[in-house]
Length: 460
Image (tube, rainbow, N blue to C red; front, side, top):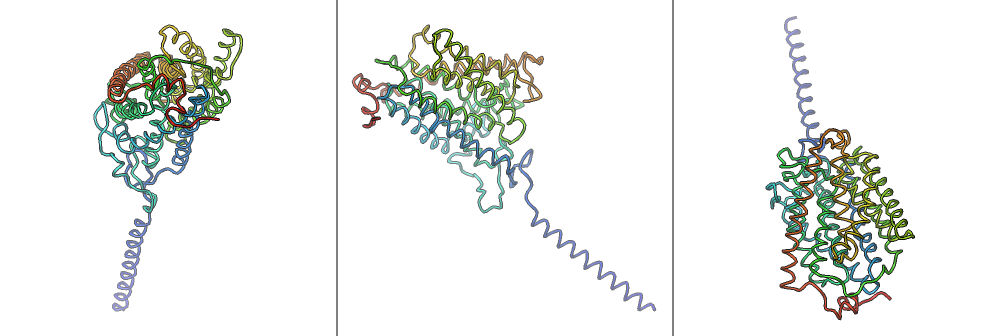
């Protein structure tokens, strides 16, 4: 009997031991087969990106790139005289190529990696140490600024912003700048102006970054009012001043091209603003809604102002007004609601019309396609009104109307600092290019047209 009990105990013990071993091996197998943790929050290494956010950001990349080629190229190309249209679209295309190269080599790292409060580090030069998502089971190491998407996608998204910003400057110096001088200026400007300012406002440790707890002043700029539009507009003004006036001017040669370009800009801007949420969530939805409202209101307001003052509404006018609305809502798009969008749209239509007519006349500079009047003035209007109409429920920060007047002061400081730094450094670069390359084409080339003089081809 005792032997039978011993054998039973041994049998049960062996059975339990076998079961425990099976469970242990099962846990190991499950641990090996378990999917990596989702990227986000504090999980930023060897994690799985959010597929919905990634899909939206891939779409946004395509939309924002469409804004430069073909959107801006056609918009500007229709506004110049026919003999300079080829040079204008060539500029947009060449800037896209040049800035892509520079961004991959240097400016991404300077703008969007940790370094100092003024400029980022060099750990991503030539995009080194980017973990490939191919063949790794979908595992990635995202940039902390975009915690739920692959860093490669975030790089592409920010690259499209870096492309369109200097391309906008071309509206100021159209029809008279050397192509070689343009390439030198844009290349140097992308490194010494765009990259530092982008780091100030959007970098992980930037002096104005609203997400940086140690920021000196927290400036709200959801999608680029200071980084893109004020930045480009001020540089454009410096170019216009340095180059001087065109020898000849004329009306837009093809308003249909301008209409098509403005339409592509409007559609692409949804990727620009809503994409800046870097997630496919509620903030992206609100950014898209207020973008549509402000753009429509600004275009309609410009049309009414022009109609009342000049007696006729024009295609170029309503298109310019819509672009002004897109510009002005850009810094505010993730922070304001529909009422704020209405006010920003009206202000953009009125003030940008004034900037493109009266202001330009007062100071007598030749901003050929109103880069300063639309982008700098619109960016300033949008940035300042963000400090008034920001809603804490939408973007996490209250504006003056919700009892936080200090935010308006912060916006003023951000605008003024970007304006001064951009103006000074842009002038230094322009003087250097003028000294070594020369800035302006000859009078004969300008009279002949840049298409033939610089590129040996012309629109038939």
